[in-house]
Image 1: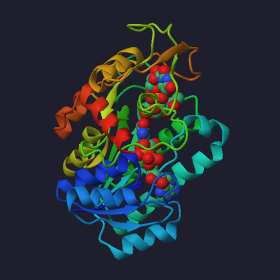
Image 2 (image 1 turned 60 degrees about the vertical axis):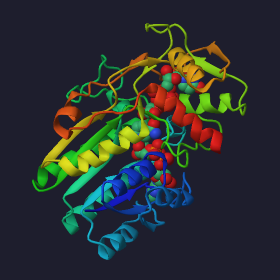
Image 3 (image 1 turned 90 degrees about the vertical axis):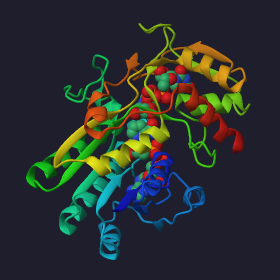
Image 4 (image 1 turned 45 degrees about the vertical axis):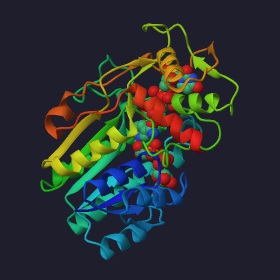
Length: 329
Ligand code: NAD
Ligand code: UD1
């Protein structure tokens, strides 16, 4: 099957390209490199010994996207390309609505025109907003506090309407929990620009000595030890979830949580990382980060039952693999 992967040079996209190639798919990547580097694809090709066709284009540009669909008989689209920094989305909402929604519109239009039947959207657990844990796909979504989250809710809605109007069009909405870690080779991984906003890359940079200490945002949440609890998922397990969705997606629109179903607190993660890597991570408990919720973890039985997908890697693998990649940089 020939798959167009938008945002395929990015963090989750590159790991998914790797998993797709290993599963025998032909992979075409479209990325404008606004948050990634083309060399990442060389690494993926080096690891898999397989080719990727690369288009350096902006997927909000309908003519550029049309060219790909004319050049190749695309059979499925996985749409990762988006801006993802929550804080920036509050400061520059139009930038986020423009990129994240127009890209979805342009790709959905191309799929209808060229009769491409399978579409997978990267969504996020952030769409649940403040809800009771574990988060279940059938829950009513709460408005999110930021334009990034809203742009995902709107993209989900657009694809739902398109699938409802075209019975042959299959859509998987994949709601990711907290992707961390890296491919076991240590050749590809997460490379945030500037100071990381997310916890795991921050921990690895503190461990490497790039940053003095970690600020733990809040020690008074109603959780096991007062710090925020999240459902960390290894990026390769997440990548394999996309392969499962491409293989098994039925007609209509289907929404799946991709997480482990287990929550880990910030302090637990620090302590597991220290044990696995053998380096101390100095930290200080600070004020809560505005917009954060206490706990977020997934109910994952739907993806297990319908996609026959299950995670294979645990939190210790996530720490080791994240560190291997950071120490190679
Ligand atoms: P990333 O920034 O590493 O990858 C996104 C890629 O899309 C980048 O390579 C970027 O250059 C590209 N891109 C952005 N806009 C584009 C455009 N208009 N045209 C072409 N390319 C464009 O991010 P990621 O962490 O790999 O996230 C991938 C997807 O998963 C995003 O949709 C994100 O919202 C979603 N997601 C990520 C997380 C996370 O924690 N990383 C969690 C939930 C959902
Ligand atoms: C973030 C995004 C969310 C996205 C998710 C997936 C924000 C506000 N939300 O959520 O939209 O879907 O990533 O990856 O950015 N923490 C610290 N110190 C730090 C960084 C984080 O204590 O320096 C804590 C946070 O308070 C939280 C946990 O670590 O409890 C995880 O934080 P983070 O990695 O940023 O992910 P989320 O907040 O879940």
